Amino acid sequence: MKALFYIAQKYLFSKSTQRSVNLINYITFTVIIIGSAALFIVLSAFSGLRTYSLSYTNNYDPDFQISPSSGKFLKVSDDELQKIRGLDEVTYLAAEVREKVYLQFKNNSTIATIVGVSENYSEVSPIDEALFFGNWNLENNLSSIGIGLSNKLELPILNFENPLQLLVPKKGNLTFASQGIGSQPFNRAHVVVSSVFSLDEESDNSLLYTDMALVQNLLELHPEEYTSLIVRANNPADFKTIYAELRELLSEEIEIKSKEEFNAALYKMLNTEFAATYTVFTLILIIALFNLTGALITIIIDKKEQLRSIAQMGLTISHLKSIFFVQGLFISVLGGGVGLLFGSLIISSQIQFEWLKIAPNLPYPVNITAVNYLIVLVTISVLGSISSLVAAQKVSPRLLS
Image 1 (cartoon, rainbow, N blue to C red):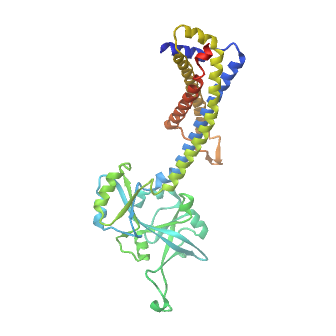
Image 2: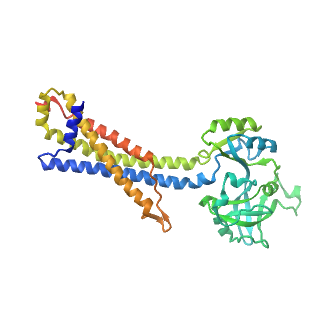
Image 3: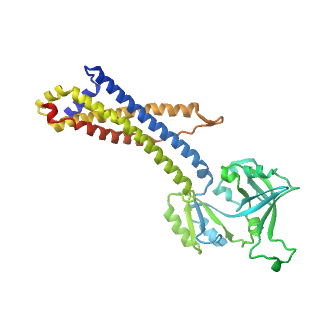
């Protein structure tokens, strides 16, 4: 076996007497370097985009969300809330009520989502860290609004003279006959905006946060009724344990979703994009490694006389095939390693100097991970092995005769 590796290594670094053979070998090696570098750069760029896309989710979304399995609202007593907070797996627990609401400020109006939150909401979802300006204070009918929604309503902060008006339909089937001609079909409330936040485009254009009690009164809810409970866990990966304990504590039928589950569409899109990107560049690598098959066959033909001499020394056809299989594997791994080195230098330069930008103040996000190195090396090794195996079949008794 050592002899086979020695011969393969010798053929790898030795030059042929024919310049065309050497040129083919150089081109093959260069193509593998470029292909592996390109795959690594694309994977690193995708990793950066994935990290950037999930940054808001990871920072502001809770680890778990508890909601009713049917209906809009979940009824949870104070005693049940205390028991949940007492679980070892639960770091923080908060509650929220979400509902569509009609907003009106002077001559401007729109439909938005109002979110009534408990006092410790920012411990689970630190939205107070995303404030564009103002202070996170929801007491005394104060609120926090998304920057897009604020611009749409042309709404200033701390405007106590002209507060923002909230309207939601009253409960039940209301008619003029039952309520009277002068009746109002809407529940109303007023809030003053104390801060403006900037999270993501959807949240910025649709969300208004305020005190839980105000929203519960507006929607005519019981103080123990919530849309959902949100949890910050010690170990989010231990989903089964947390799920079992919460099901045991809560009397109502509940649905528990992890961060990945209530952002399922985003994760599915990212995984699909990764699969598509990897597939496209793997196909490019497959085409590139056709050169390896051709180069090995050229080397086999060029070394035909030497192979005859080696065969006469006692090596079988199988041994000779192994020599060129190993040589092809050497070329693939060495080319892949050099390609990874070049790719790493390019990605590192982007991280250090930010020479490629999406916007003037936003560099293109890239991320170097061990997984990307492993993916490139495994891909190159597998495809290189297949190409080498195909080329090695050229060695036959007929060739040596």
